[in-house]
Length: 364
Ligand SMILES: Nc1ncnc2c1ncn2[C@@H]1O[C@H](COP(=O)(O)OP(=O)(O)O)[C@@H](O)[C@H]1O
Ligand SMILES: [Mg+2]
Image (tube, rainbow, N blue to C red; front, side, top):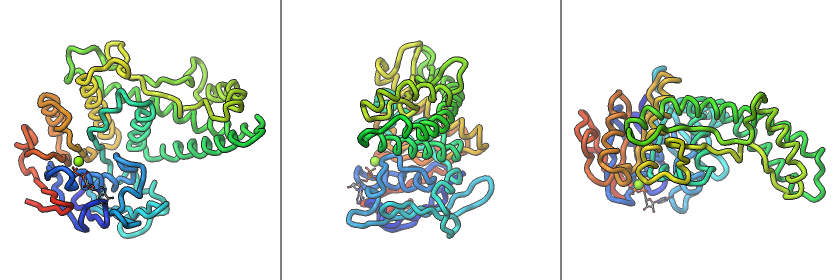
């Protein structure tokens, strides 16, 4: 699948304009601060997901404005569609072929894109929340319906948090929320475990290529909610019951998949604590390439791959291997960088080069 054009309006520093994109390799160049990442972000937002840079729509409006939009033309196996999102305070309105959709969730799955930016390198050694977000985002890429489960869980958790904050909350008041948390939470744990298992399958292959002398990459859901001989929802029910007195004393929800983590090891050594910079890079690249393969395997179509400024963070060897993997199949690959495209990417036949200058795109 590919995005053949993207039209931005009041979006960050970009001038209102429409940009035509090739279905193969695209290189977006320009000096720092001119709008390369902004353009990449705009393309990504056509997926219907939150930005890979921010959760806040307010950051997307051109300074001083209170709305912005991105529209684009996407071609996939089933045809060509016009997708769009209009951001206003408190709302993300999605459009399909000129018609407003009931919910932005209906946009999911029409354009699948995987973004990779230098901040993804935080994934390995950063806080657990980043790894949960990585899992959840890509699980939604694969299976848009999973978002409803995540949202249901978050709603129940927010309600339970509010009740715990009130004076004199009794156990009875927690029960309906605990039941919802067990139902949604059980699905989250099961889905995450399945996802991690399939991802490990793919990622170990790439990791072997990146770091043949390192030990084997292994991924595991780290959770108190995985118990032998017990379904995940029952495990959550039992943990919630045990934790109730502590939760009421501390007035905070202490149990559930919102506390889980993705444990990443190389040769049995925990990467969160011990991975070197080089090992971290190899692991993150392997995970991302693994995700791309999974999406291809499940949907039968190559997702659009967006690489932001990777050359600033990757050494030549890792960068070449990344492009070798990505360019080995026909796909739309959109890359930003300040220097001219190097190596394999630079030699890609039909490479489209786009220059962004102070928010304005010039195509050559
Ligand atoms: N909401 C916004 N409104 C106007 N300008 C913005 C907004 N958000 C970011 N910018 C500006 O966009 C520029 C950065 O664009 P970016 O795409 O990150 O640059 P780069 O080409 O280095 O990737 C900065 O000058 C920043 O001030
Ligand atoms: Mg940038």
